[in-house]
Length: 108
Image 1 (cartoon, helix red, strand yellow):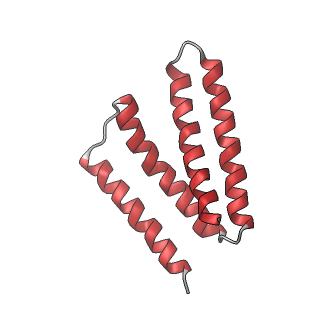
Image 2 (cartoon, rainbow, N blue to C red; image 1 turned 60 degrees about the vertical axis):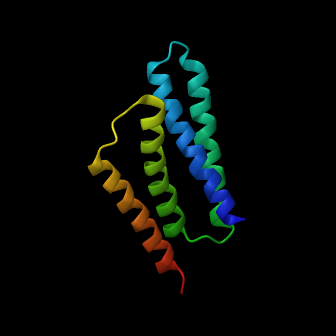
């Protein structure tokens, strides 16, 4: 169940970050700021539940932060037509490799 909480925390954080981008360019900013606040609140609650379930802090935070960066970059490419260069794609691949390395290192 801890991984479900962590996945929810990641998706909530990405949704909140994308709401921040929408708030920056929308006429009706209020609804986007509500989504932003709700997304970050849900992300922290779900991350807390994942930690409470026994997930190590270093592993949980590493996966949460790195996955959030990678998914936000991909989503911003799709939703906002922002650039995603070969160098940025390499960075995302390195993030994935780093998260896998942390996860493998946590298993004894």
